[in-house]
Length: 373
Image (tube, rainbow, N blue to C red):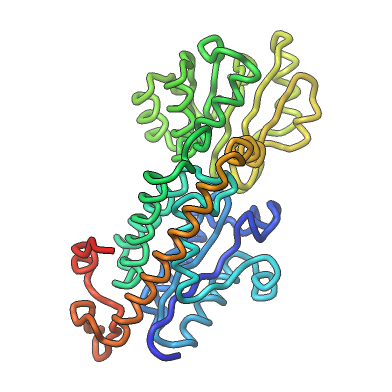
């Protein structure tokens, strides 16, 4: 390997079936354990783990091939994918292909719901956490900052975000199709993470007046409820509220199902004859899929919402191609720039690491001050 190299390994909805992605999902404990193992690797200059409901990815940079190979092995072991599984259900990219992929992810072009806006916030959050923990080198700082800029351009200069492409907006549209005006419906949101908060706010903005919020983290639920004027209930009793709810949106981070068929059947037996609308946005699933077989129960998943959004997008595929072309150019330009820095063209990125240094590793301040293209 001639100088530091960028590596991406991972799996997403495009490469792996849902069942496998559910098994690969890294909760906070598993993610922290993997981060510690990666941080301990010698000659690994920097890394970032991106874990969302539809993808698990590792971005890494090193000036030693064995360090990248070891990082890949640790990732495959932690996710349960294995090296053989990576070959079949995942992907491995290097160099300019890493930049191209990340820019498409940030722009929503690689999402199951094309053009969706939530992914950019998720990547920024992962970036902020990695930066705070000192896991990023200068090249990775630059890679992610330039990808954020590419996403901003794509959203401002094309029509990929027109129509129902945010998760919240599509959930609202689906709810309206079934229940009509939301001001006549009682809505319960189970989970107050980013997805739950976005959907709850979208429901409120579009007329929902009776919203109930619950979460394992009571403080998060309280903060969300105050921002939208919702009622908070204790997480231990939320299933009792199903009897009175019209729409239940579930988006917890539980590794197992939190709502069973028997629990839904019991709630339906105690309520007046009217439909129950369940939106399961969690990966792994929060709701037992056999619930959909019950009378007057309608279960929708993230994939169902993505299909709705992509139907709206089909008339604007020219905008998607415009964004892809722009990203191809920006990724190539960024990679050439990083390569010049590898060759020593930019001394400001040099930083000592004990008795050795990498020309792609520098201070956060240096990379943040560079706002050029």
